[in-house]
Length: 58
Image (cartoon, rainbow, N blue to C red; front, side):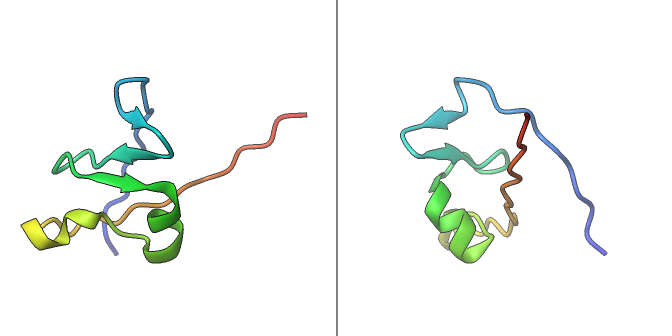
């Protein structure tokens, strides 16, 4: 089983509809994360898996 690390995102990490990968810095859109579960930096050798969790507060 792979290690799982949770990262709190800051304003610096976010961009329009996406984030920078915490390992390689490649921009990955939220849609790509939902569709592939991986960083788009695979062409640079990054094998980081990414996942989005939705938190609903009532």
